[in-house]
Image 1 (tube, helix red, strand yellow):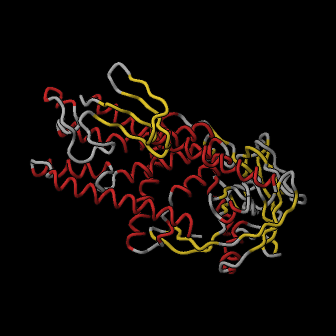
Image 2 (image 1 turned 45 degrees about the vertical axis):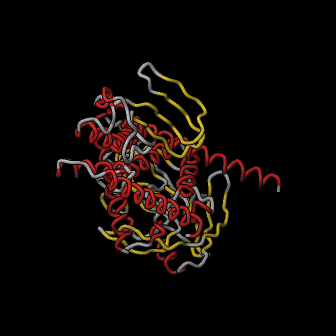
Image 3 (image 1 turned 180 degrees about the horizontal axis):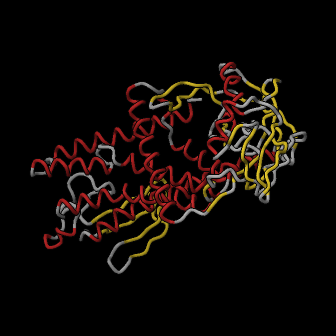
Length: 443
């Protein structure tokens, strides 16, 4: 009992620490975007705060800006000269008229627009750089099907391949690249052993190798039934409800047939052996061909079998291009998901709150530095997108006000600003409470 409490306490501490670190990085970059572009635009920052509430640490720089760390690490803010509050919302405080140009409200429209837009833009830049860094670090699979490594496999799996082998065909089917190998999971009859034709040290030969898409777990979705049951990347699924599983594609019909009833997976894990895991599939909305469909899922993905690809180094420009593309994918996915939720295509349980994000952060950190960094990129792009929504108190709300001013030639009235800011704050708080309730009540 004491060991269980210690384990749970340690797991909670790790989850909280991972969440605070990820959020602090994302918020710090976001607020620094506001600060530095504001400074370049001639707007003076009085306070740069990481966190809210009582001040824990502070120092004043030569420009008069107070840099501080506050006690509640759930956000941050930059308070510019003349701001009435940390959100830079509503009418500002009175300042010396000689300093009006250094306030956010007294700066030219272009300077205000650039300063506010810089927060989300810096989030997008952070996401692209993080994705690019992970891609450059992990490398990219070479186009030719060259074996980089051999993953551990259960006893009885025949695998005569070696690192460095170039795969030419499997079961008589040509495999010019990795996508072609993965497509064999749809055309090649499932079997424990196939004939692999390879080129080794310049000579072609045929030897015995495993199925190209065995039921080997390559990824576990955070907060999924598989993650809750402690399945891990590298686990091999031997049976589901007592029925043998040869290929990863055999899982989906078996899970769908269960219709939410518990399923028992027999798993082989390197260094542990065989163990049974009971999972309860969860119905989720899954993006499919531009829309969404409901599926019963357990949260595991396959792809790489026992044959792991050789990788090549990604140059800086290639990595940055791939990082930018991944950032756009996150933004587009966030937009389509939001539209689908508002239109009723998908359920409201797809909106998560701080508890879910913290759990995902903890699980990603436990899975390794690469997974944790990738999550920071995803969250940074997602938070940048959310901040651009035209809701008062968010950056998008400020930008909407500035757009109104640019079109009409005058800003909204003080009364309208107060009313819209109050509505925006109420909406944001409602969404936060709704997300937290989903974390607790949704399966």
